[in-house]
Image (cartoon, rainbow, N blue to C red):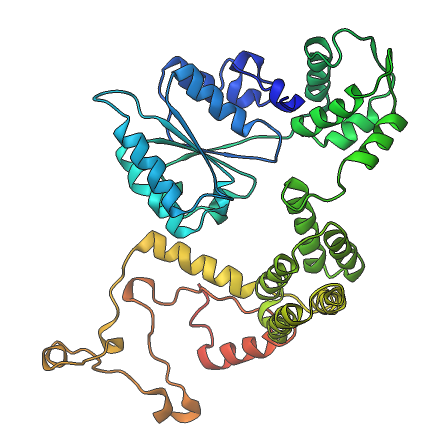
Length: 422
């Protein structure tokens, strides 16, 4: 038997709850259906808000072939196989089939690159679903060819609409009397997620009582007995990981240890936790305390050697150290700024004096001419230009003033003075 959430999955936009900005009378998806044209797009939003459902509705109402992949399970070969199937099954001027990829943010660069040509040529219309910010997780080449639409968590009114729809339509309830005496726990545990609400209602529907009296205590007891506190493969996995990192970033060791304990109690893979610590050490602590990255790397090695349950102590030590360390995101912001400049300016030529003259022709073209070898100058420093002519003097790295980075700032001020102040 299908789960309740699947039985209640809407088949048309008229049955779809929420996301009025996309599905309402003036919504872009409704307009796209009316015009029978849809671009490649990315649905970005929390779990249980209808990303997969919308993709299926679009394919169904446009009468397009529908192919589906999960980025958790599919490799490059799977992507190429489904693209070849889409290509071979398409005839003449037939509309492009829809390829839906769930959790597309989990695709690595090579997997995303495998999609690029097919999207460019119109072999498929790509619909991706992600809970992560696409600008961070999807490469620019693919992202630039897709429209990004943000989906929101369902509000209380929409969750109650779904509740009444389930009670009216599903066999679990429609022959019984259902009294919603209290709604607060139902809304709280649903967390704006239609699938969670359906899971809770399925638990309630399995009870033999008639009438069904829904109270806060009933919902709390059922949820605590039947629904895992932590789902390492689901949305709570990412919510808790986010709270964990934000607590470290916020220098709160108490909260950091609490969220660490939640992950451990939920059976999280310790390698996932350590990867988050490595990222935090580089992104949030950075050059304010370069030892943080070394400690996180040592933690990674120790966890691999020791295993559970003792690894919890190693992780706790690293977490407290990172949470209590001075913070700087200057390196993270610096590389983001550098990438933005590269994207905006393209392949600027390397200044001649920085080029390597390995042939006579290159020497005749003045490759390397005028280069000042730093070690030949006092303090191993010569104030020469290292950036392309078009972006000379552009400030990319903005040194912070905390911890070790204050020394870096002093070094920069001494050597370069106000050269990089733009």
